[in-house]
Length: 204
Image 1 (cartoon, helix red, strand yellow):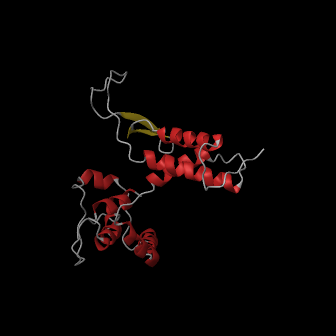
Image 2: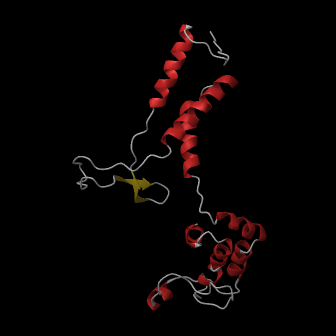
Image 3: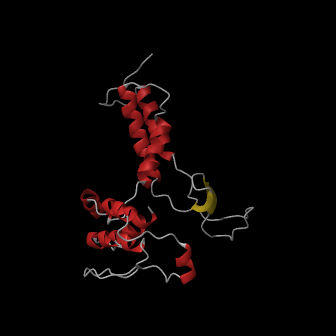
């Protein structure tokens, strides 16, 4: 996964370069870091590996059973075609944020009518669109972590799967001012002082 992410991040949005870097995995795993390919990408981009490190690592044997099995995966025709769509380095982070907003307005433990689902989905979309471009928060006062003032805020988060800590950016708090405008409009329509063409469904 790390190699695939590196290929997408360093391919300069060129599908052919991405595929070439992906295929270079077959050379690296057999301790071959330069090769003749004629396509412009013919050596690994990592730093020189010291001899003692090379001796400690368990490299695959070129042409061996494990290497041939890996080759069938790396050079799979459908995978090679799909890889070309990754050259834009798109990820699902924003989509996951939207799904989080959706679950807030549509808890799975509660049943809803179709009209309710439409309204709650629209609220989730408004919430997401109003907060998707939040910027990283700044340190405005002293904290227990002794972070310098007026620097971007970060926090330490534990990865339960890999059992290690990593640093994550802290963003400004979400803004829900748009909900007050919606509530004001609802109260106006409910009072009868203003009419709307949108049908209002009232359940008892």
